[in-house]
Image (cartoon, rainbow, N blue to C red; front, top):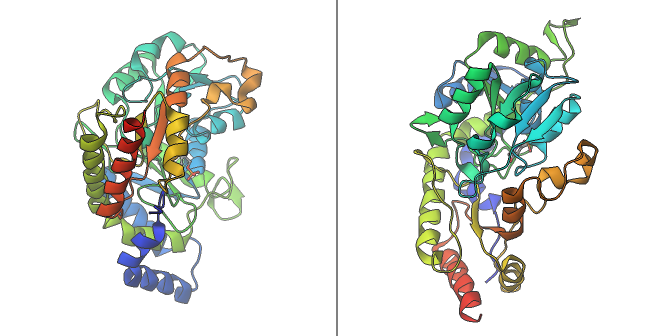
Amino acid sequence: MKIPFLDLKRQYRTIKEEIDSAIREVVESGRYIGGDKVSSFEEHIADYIGVKYAIGVSSGTDALLASLMALDVGPGDEVITSPFTFIATAEVVSFLGAKPVFVDIDEKSFNIDPDKIEDKITDKTKAIVPVHLFGQMADMDRIMEIARRHGIAVVEDAAQAIGATYKAKMACSIGDIGCLSFFPSKNLGAFGDGGMVCTNDESISRKVRMIREHGSEKKYYHKRIGFNGRLDSIQAAILDVKLHYLDRWAESRIDNAEFYNERLSGYVKTPSVTVEGKHVYNQYSVLTDKRDELVDFLNSRGVPTAVYYPVPLHLQEVFRPYGYKEGDFPVSERISRSILSLPIFPELYQEEKEYIVETVAGFYKNQ
Ligand SMILES: *Cc1c(COP(=O)(O)O)cnc(C)c1O
């Protein structure tokens, strides 16, 4: 059996007619930038998340960038985040001339460890960016309490966590700003790049709207530095269709995760749900001390795997100038050597899931 890690064509086939007609409508309208499709999708996301404002942008990376720009993060500033995330989270901090200050993760949730944040706060700290890794939210009560006490902003990186909850609150509704990505492999994926900035703060929402539009509110009158950061109309139309299915797809991911948890728990360390709320499993990531051998065994038998992430950010070449070194964040380092993700997408067939768990079991029975 040859199983895909993620097959977006399967999802498309289930909603082809609706998607095709949404695309056709945009193409025939002649309105390809902005317009009703973008503003109505923004309203639907704001309703879904439960925030006052949602601003469509060109990617999750640009959502983070525009958010930090709206907070006036710049040279000399520090931004606290996790070293165990996709590069974009910290890259945008460096891009603005500020310093990413890493705080190690909790070994169960893989999210930033709130116990270790306060030690890293200085008078230069402008923001904390918790990442809701793999679809499970960071410990937001603790993080918000620390941030409020020090007068620091919180920007949620919810690129992997649309629809996830923490004590009945949606990802992106708790921090000062929340960032979403619509990269095709995310739980709500476009047919290209896209992102969204969510906030309840009117002034931040106005700034982000300006920033995504070259710093202007009125065409050809520029108040600040921005960039071309808009969400395409065609992507908004596609995403608006898909938003109706998002919760159902999340339920399928949760069902798949429960199936794996039950069948794999004797062999590998299955994911822990550590906060009160919903884990939406953008990735299903297990721990094993035989990671590389297991990867080879699975891949050679048609079971694809992925490693998120093989190198924590503090050890990435690009961040070498900051002087971080091996041993600085031992939990992230250890986990990056033992983590492994299995296919979890909603349209997996039952026989594929059976084959995956049997193949993992086969590896351990041969040991
Ligand atoms: C995907 C992702 C991003 C970036 O989103 P893009 O839409 O690809 O720019 C940022 N942070 C995390 C944690 C991500 O997974």
